Image 1: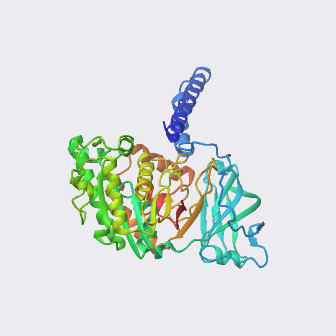
Image 2: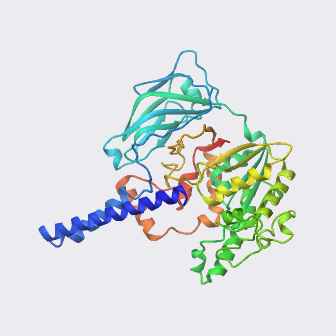
Length: 466
């Protein structure tokens, strides 16, 4: 059982215990006071839960984030005087540096009901970065893009529904401009490349998008059209295969650089466990990858027999690496992103790279987290803080790419073309969001209803050099 599954199991257990306690209190109130209190209090308790306590947060907001960064990373001295964040005299920052500020954030009592956030003001590039409700611990603000205003001594940090405490610590990470290199994005599913790296690959001098799976499962939306389970899964796989080839064209990626490998969703772990054994689709009644690879511009080793095996996946990836010779590979982060297909995608790339004459730079991304399904927290267009991390087992090396407003809009349109982000959310989820807008001050995304529009269309894209 994965760490995220363990956390989810504990969360559900605690939720059941809380529900039983609430029911017992309601029954006592009904017996001791009046029977009509039971349904009234039950409705109020449910509304309160949906508005303030329904986030999937699998840790205490009072826990400190625990990051370790590479040794010898520059740490320019900064001081927080009131709301003003100031560098020591004579300290200069590289404008394109990725800047990370560690500081203790403590929620006010209102910050238990409204999302605590820190406003970054003082120049022409204001930002808002949001944390967990009830936060009381060490957190990491992303000051990337704020180097000029910070160097001028004009940057102000103002907490809303929270206070900033203690002496801050700043790290400045310098990287080459990866946009000027040949970039290959590894997407376990159609839309992963756009969610994580649209801003990067749309600006790269040369870009390749390689999607590993057809993403055919969980096709209930298409079953509602009158299709059976198998037919719905096949239709969804065809649509997402099309998306993986067509949507990057919106960013100017040549069709010949968009590749769909057609393996089956959530089957990569089983393939990895038995590399020579074909592993068919869970729902589409298929054991041949070739129907989802028909739009590729050239043949690959796996086209010979279409067998969904780990060995074929490695052969496909190796052929693509030799053909494209990427200088930068963007792929799921093996520690931060717990999705099983994402973990296997990273492992497959590492295995396919073994023995090659050159080794590209690897940049990791996280479209999913172990601990917090809402991260990045806050609104569309806002900055991205560093994600929750509680085991500093190895140093992490962040790189942040800034996205201006027009590029954010283009990214949102790319996501809107993805069929998997188009269906309406279930009624319960829509009702929950309505209550949170009304009672907790949360707003949806102007670009779309799916939660990924809020989480992915931001002023930053955050990567980690592996």
